[in-house]
Image 1 (cartoon, one colour):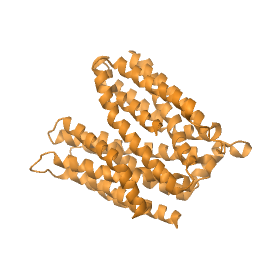
Image 2 (cartoon, helix red, strand yellow; image 1 turned 60 degrees about the vertical axis):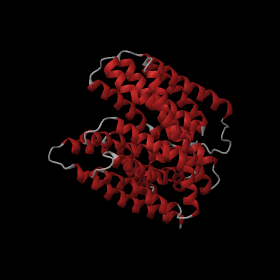
Image 3 (cartoon, one colour; image 1 turned 90 degrees about the horizontal axis):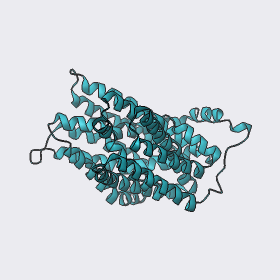
Image 4 (cartoon, one colour; image 1 turned 90 degrees about the vertical axis):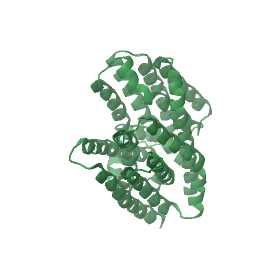
Length: 384
């Protein structure tokens, strides 16, 4: 839990202000800023499978610790460097650290859980602490950013160094982890085996819709706010609303799901809610002109709280215990590709004069229904 909180606290105290630092403090062009941000995303999303597989072979704790150290170097480089080559190195290290850290962290949690109920509870708590870090990170970051971005980089690096020391000292070794070894454990055979696991592949493809929806917070939401004539303050309120709801409601919602509707129904409902939340972009509320954006945040957050922890907790249903890292890596990697392609397509549609944005929001609602029904069938079949 300390892991999830500190990871997001350090990440979100630096990343939201990186583009502004590069463009206005260092005087870089938007193309250079896009290159840095894109390399950070690519080195993380594209390397998740590699990081997860290394965790299966070398041990999850070892990869978690290595990821923390690599991110220390990445954040220091981003905070201190003033030349493009050094900043690109920092961006790559920052992203690659996440690829080392995230799949092994999820696999560690799943390995520790004795049954599905325990996994559901653990991943709900992880989402809760991560949201707390996501909420506090930008507030701490903006305070330091007023002093200097150098302090943001040093402080974020210091947090990950502290996280490394805490986990090196207190995170137990997974004695029961079945590390892959021997000639039968060649990684490419393992990857082919995952791709031939039809149930898992279908689960991942339907789950991609979550990543598509989530990354619209950084593309479709700002675009719609600007096109509606509002300032960035509205975006801030959307994120604050989402974080406060997640911190206060995640655990009660998870308990309610366990006692009433069950996981398969909750995942379907969560996906549908996230898709339908974009329909609030199609109208305004007279009494509070940007109230529709708060309704979007509320609907989107409840859908995410119902869906996200259960997605993570159900990956072990599809794989042997010795391959948890690789399966989490592939799940995250495909989700990253879906987010990238989705942002590319949505960005192109929003930039096209002949496309009415209303149809994009309707399409998201339809995708939510189809993906929700698909993931319900996959999970229900496994539970049966």
